[in-house]
Amino acid sequence: MDWYPLRLTTPVKQHVFGGRVLADRWGRAGLPDGPVAETWEVSDVDGEGAVVTGGPLAGRALRDLVREHPEELLGRGPHGGRFPVLTKFIDATGPLPVHLHADDETARRIEGEPNGKTEAWHILEAAPGATALAGVRRGVDRDRLHRALLAQDFDAVLRRLPVRAGQTLYVPGGTLHSFGPGTLVYEIEQTSDTQQHAMRHRMEDGAPIPDREWHAAIERLLEEWRPEPRPDFHSGLSVPVDDGVERTVLCAGPYFALERWRAGTAAPLVHEFSTAMVLSNAGAPVTVTTPGGRERLGRAESLLLPAALGRLRIEGPADVLLGYVPDLPTDIRAPLLAAGHGPAAITALGA
Image 1 (tube, rainbow, N blue to C red):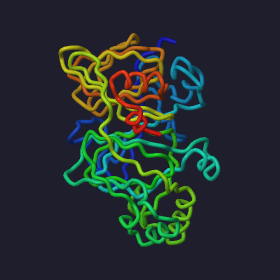
Image 2: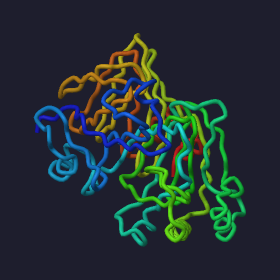
Image 3: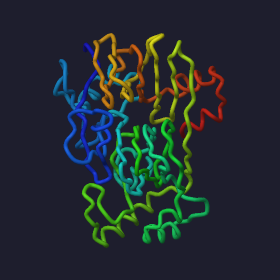
């Protein structure tokens, strides 16, 4: 197979908490009128799977390519039957619902799904005073949480954290959470759309949820809730690369890693890789050059780089995000230790 950078279809979610930041402030073209809450940059979720939009593979489903060419597309194994990560831009002009996603064991046991959803948020923009909810306060048990959810008194039981642009939060499955208003986020997560939320309205259109359905949803949420995680925001760990080229590891765990790379004009951004890379642009338009061809990438747009390409080059100025499934000892621990970061700081990047 002659691989090249893959541009994919991106499902758009017009939930009520969305706004027009991606279109009006970030210049993302092709978005529908009205609120845009989420763009799913690379998705292999059932019913929302991406399709290649250009080149010889145009019209091919991402899942079919994963199953037919796992080593060339994904790189090192083991390989499952679908692309392992889901990435999104999320415009929380309004607040997201208070919700959680099951962890792996709970998703298999209760949801009948192959895996749950651990996720991480990288904050691209945050209004002054923006906050997020992440995990319960110490000492909160199931009964107290249940009462607070019924009263919709989330601050009585959840941790409210300040949010600043450039920071990242790693959110293990089973953690109650929310963010917004006034927050733009890039999210990377396990491929899953399982969730339970505690709100009295539907996030899709704001319609009220009938009492019986709402009470059942809260009971299901409590079954899937994990009380232990209390994640905190951090600024990531930097690794020197070249003159004016900056690599920051934002989060890293067994399911995914996310890095932010910036480059000036003194030296190009050059990166060699052996696993599939999701490349999303957080800055000015750039040209991405690989052994399989060149692609112009606008702000808030993404490419999937198959592992077989092995190398990318971007002339600066550039500000891009790279998401992938890491080999933690090789991709994360070794370069960060060599850069002088301690084991505790590296562990704090994820589970």
